[in-house]
Image 1 (tube, helix red, strand yellow):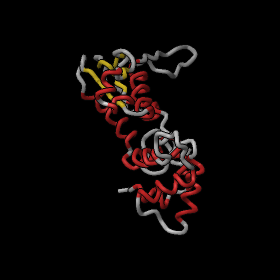
Image 2: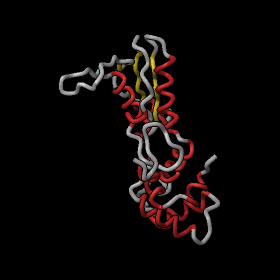
Image 3: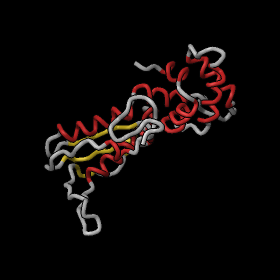
Length: 207
């Protein structure tokens, strides 16, 4: 399958910038993408350390910075190559189909992109839209989940015992008796990125 090296060494700068900017929330996404293009014209990136060092040299690192300047880029590459957001979305739709009434959906996320998808899914499935005279094409639908509170984060004691819990957020919902709806990936607002296409999303340049 597609590897991080394939992405770094062959994707267009604009596509790299979109990947780094959205999936890594990297504010220097464009600068890093252009640097990668210039650097790989001489020779391709073969080791992760090469890319990490190149980003640090290009962007710089202040003494107060707690994380390496390449951290967000590597996060973006991991999420993109593994299609982590797409897999999470598929899992949520699958849960809607297999959970029995009263069954609980509980999802722990570790960064804002994952949490956004879970939050949008629960909001969409717990929301009841009805037709109106203003929108005659709208069809009534029944909520397939009801929210079980808001997002829950770790307390100070848990974070002290497990520092990784600092970024964790738990969201839960309870399955209703309504039949499962169709899998509509457009509810997540996933971006236009290169690579495998999910239903409801577009590759760059597509409409």
